Length: 350
Image 1 (cartoon, helix red, strand yellow):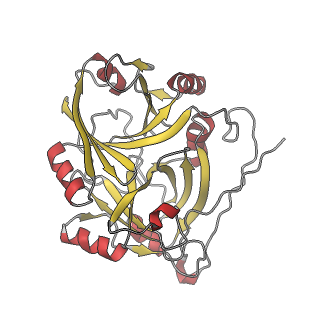
Image 2: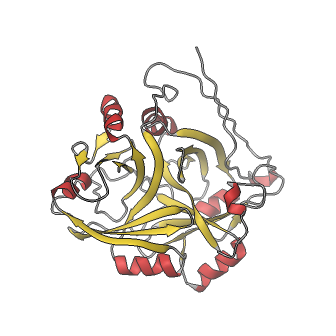
Image 3: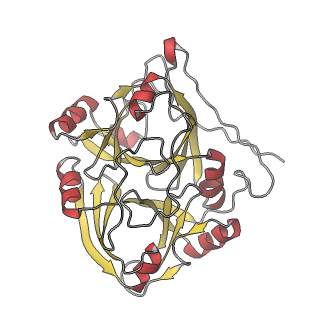
C-alpha cells in the first residue's frame, strides 16, 4: 500500500543564464517501518515559540525592541534542579525574556551561570549550527533602509527578489542580517497573493511577525524521520533552490538547497535547509550545550509523555534525562531533545 502526498511550492530561484524555474512537487511513497511516511498521531499541538541563547540580555532586548519592534511580555530568572536537568547544564541560572511580534513569540535566554561559548566568527550559512527566524515585513525597501540606518551586520549582499517569470514565487523578497551576538535573522516580504493571508492585512506596522525558523540539516530524509515521522509535524511544501539570488541571499557561492517546510496546527513553521552544494558546511559540535550562544531551541506544546515514548523508540538524543515534572510555575512537564543534526527541541505541557 502506498500513500502519495503532493506538496505545495514554498520557494524557487532562477538558474544562471535565465534558466527556467525548478518547481519541485514532492511525492512521498510509504516505506517500511521507521520511514518518513510512517507517521503516528502527532504529540505536538503547536509550535509555541523560538528560543535563542544570548550573551548580554540587556543589549539583545534593546536590539529586538528598538530595531525590530518586538514587545516585552515577561522578564524572569530561573534556577534549581528542575532547570539544570531540563537544559542539561549543572548550576544553571537562566534569565529568560519573552518577546512578541504580531502573533508570534521569541524567547531570549541568557545563562548568567555558567557562561557558554560564543558563535564562531567564521560561521557560514551552510554550517549545521545555522538557524534563523524569518520576520515578515510590510515593505522590503522601507525595512532594508531602516536596518541600514541601524547599522546592522549584513549576512546577505542585499535584498534578493524572486524573478517575475516564476508564477508561484515572483516578487517574494528576502534579506539576511545578524543580531548583536551574530545570530542570523531574515526579513521576508510576500507580495499580494503570496504567503499566509494574514501578512496582507492593512495596518501601519513595518515588522509583522515570524513566519518560520530555518535550520541547516545534513540529510532531509533523516530529519523528516524526526520532525515528521516521530513528532508528527506536517509537510507543507518543498523546493530546490539555486542560482545567483540564492547564492547572494545565503552568501554561499554555488549554493543549491533542498528546502522542506513543516508545520504544526498552530504557530510558525520550520524549514529544513539541506545544502546539496557545496557540501563543505561544518557539523554541529558534538559537545554543544544549552548555554553555548550558537544554541537555539524550537519550543512545542506537546503531550510530553507521548512524545517521550515516540522518541525513545527511535533512539534520538536527549538533553534532559527524561521528562521533567515541575511543581511551580506555568509548566507541568518539559523535555529537551536534539534532532539528528544537533538542533534542540523543547517539548512542554502547561
